[in-house]
Image (tube, rainbow, N blue to C red; front, side):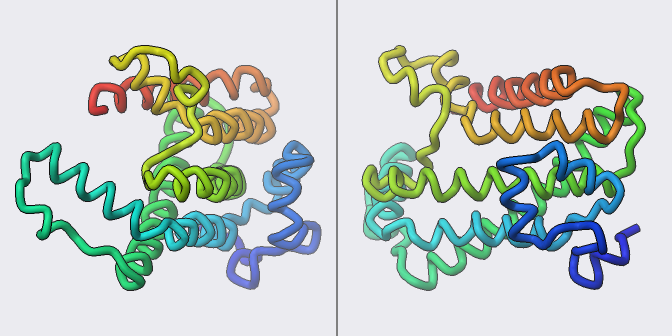
Length: 230
């Protein structure tokens, strides 16, 4: 069930405003998670961070998308490059909205996943609303990552570019191992550590270290799967 404070503005009597909570996830996440444990609001923060991440897509130049579509067409053996999509304001608008909606849905699915792993598999005590609240507020890191990588995407003309572990080792040869490192986004690892902290707050029996280990392990597992498709 959604908390009544969620409907009335996502702010209870003892809960800071949305911007303050966004700042606290960076500077005092443990104290914020303690508050969210009691008042587990999530909707407006998830909506705001998803919209912010989607907005970053708007600023990716048309040239980057043109280069991306051209490379995709050449990889698929398409000879007629005149048939590739032509980016423009309408394309960027649809891309921004689509990205925002996708990120929102993925956030909810991630909360379902963490709830299943920590509560049903590992036996933690927490509600689904509490998991949603932690994931929604940690998604501030995702939004920061979207804008932090934006200058690189603009200069390199690559809308897929991310700051990953692979970025730190550009000298490694191409292959599965390098693909896994490329899939390990640095901001995703940061978010995993914070999510682990949130899990330890929701259930005092769990330490931050064990919560972070589980989340980092899951992040690495996803990267290993992504490496097969790179």
